Amino acid sequence: MKKFAMILSAALIASAAFAASYKNNTYQKLAKEYTVKAQKALDAGEYALSEEYAKKAEENAALSEEYIRHMLAKDNADRDMKAAKERIAYVESIHGDVNFPIAYEAAVKAYGQAEGAYTAEDYEGASRIAKTVLDTLAEIYEITPLPKYYIVRPWATDKDCFWNISGRPYVYNNPFLWENLYEANKSKLPKPSDPNLILPGMKMEIPSITGEYRDGVYSPDVEYEPYKPAK
Image (cartoon, rainbow, N blue to C red; front, top):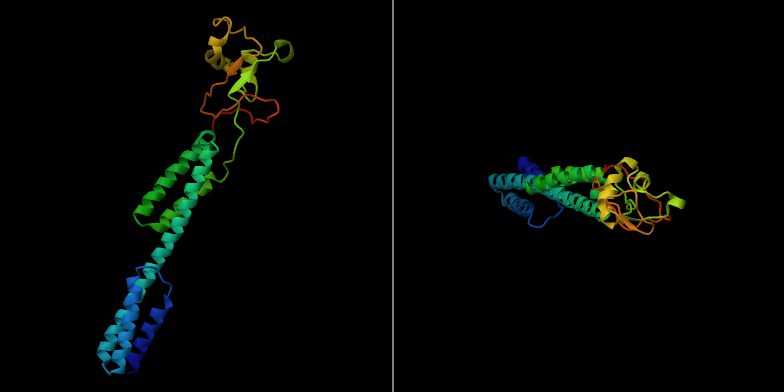
């Protein structure tokens, strides 16, 4: 009698210990049902049957615990995957995919791996990988776009020529890259075959040469970061 009471007591404790409820947690329901049956059988003096029900209650309580842990891991993965996806979208919105392509591509690849883990119901793995996406993109910040156009100014005041313009930090930061400007704008020149003749007021296009994001017309009132190859 004492043995059966101890078994039933253990079943009751196991059933109550995992009271956290998740929809469709069949194991939890069965643990409670078998606990009730075990108690009734014990009260009726059917000790063998009570012991059988008590064991089933314990088994289902253990399965309920595993199920709840699995669902908690899924909840965490849902949260972390959502945060990672939103971070990627934010980075894209500030052209971080262009300005920080290495970090962006690594993050997108990792997110794909997280999706694979999630599909395989490896929720802990999905959560862990999703967090690496956040870590990878943590230091990406919004950069004022480099100018896409430049209005040529007089030689007398600004010494504007393809060579000098190309060497300015907000253009290519390197005068030796001047031919990129020439090729993109020679049709606008009075004499396309002569790169030395550019006129003040000409709207010169500054083509992207390494995938850097450019937009708008150069303004001396804007503080631009110096051009450098995309990170």
